[in-house]
Image (tube, rainbow over all chains, first blue to last red; front, side, top):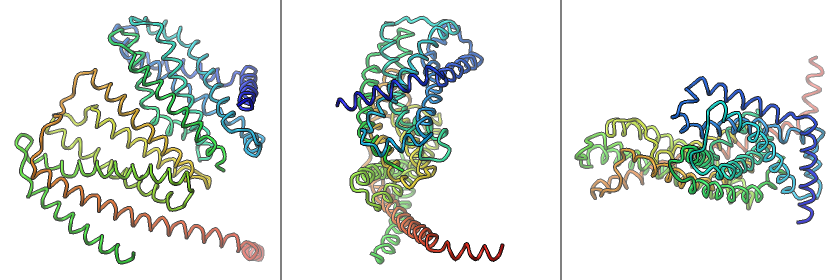
Length: 225
Length: 236
């Protein structure tokens, strides 16, 4: 257990330091989601009162697409200089690497959300009519659902041709219940029409199921050559 | 074993013809929907067959993850392919039925959406198999199949709740079925299952042969190179 914790911390610190120095992932995600915000605003009147109902979907679609940008870069760094191969032959537990990558992506996407939320509020004139304290819970659970599966499928698509295309093709169908839950929960909180409790529970269940499944199965994927 | 295949083929052919006759002539015409309701005898058996095939796919995938047998992988591949075909039949016949009866092609009802999501998951499974470039395709595919199976209950609950808090679509839920209709339905289901088994079987044999050919070619390529390079050398 201790080995996992220290390895996870080492990999995570390395990834965060690299990201801090280059800011590749966060910049591309930020710019990408900004573009999504602007392009969406052309398709409907974003400040109208009715658009509050679709705002939940919109916010999450922007984050989803932006997260895919970051997730695609997750393992690219480890492919260079055969880092992943040397990790594979070392006795280090595979799950430590996986957890570090998931935590790293979780931090990146959370930072993105923290930076983008003010923009959404300004551009789309958003205001929570329901209990606003639930929004960070939904954001954290939803982001975890996206990155835990996304990191796993990104590792899987390393072994495929045209891997950048492969990730969304694998990630989106499996994530449908999580996406539905995020969108509905956010919509429920923004409109205040109904309770978001069921969706939060569903998101938590999704997170638990797929975190356990990923930890069980990641060893297979890492060893696959 | 070689005898069984033609026997099953003839049996399936006979059963399919009988089921077709029963569906078009034998079954009573539905009172409110009329003749269009007869598509029900294709729609529902296809759905059941597809779900059974997906279940087999999950079972074979788990078997592969545990024992790593080639057979389990081929079964997983074959059942996913044939299952997607049957699922496509369901998704195509559904709207044809819905349009005259409900007045709309599609509604985001629980069962429709669940079938569509299942179809999406298995199409992505087949895409992964097609795009995977390494020798570990079976392993990755089996892992994805497990993820897909875990997803099904979550999809079910999410859509169930999603739809129950919105206005109910125009689906005729519940109701009893005429015993004669049930009989025709079951005959059709049996025929479709036999047909699916037949297709899976021949696809299985094809896949076994294809892999044997690939293996032989790879082996030949390993044994040949010196001769080939000398030939090309003399030609150049």
